[in-house]
Image (cartoon, rainbow, N blue to C red):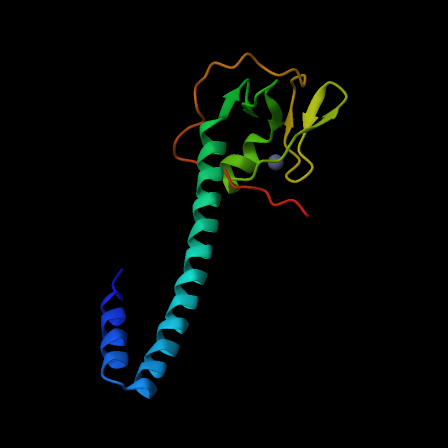
Length: 136
Ligand SMILES: [Zn+2]
């Protein structure tokens, strides 16, 4: 911790009987502690978001022209390849008769919505999936 020397400084001020200076230093140290705690909270949140994005991109795979997401059960999807490849968005394709259609970009894929056999290969590395936020 880069501010550890301040505890020694505080100790010395109290030892010398400089209570007013010690109190001033204590207030500074408290402010610094609050700022560091807030920074830690932000860093923990960023770390969690990065782990989520990494986990998502590692479990995404392309099969028959559409993206699928590995899960503990059947693969989730299918997701629009155009929206993912252009904007990194995972948008589930909607079944329209025998085709699948993206409600965002209008892409149409002529494939049933049956989950594919997972070949275990990750999506191309040049892309990173975005985590879609859901209302709480
Ligand atoms: Zn789309």
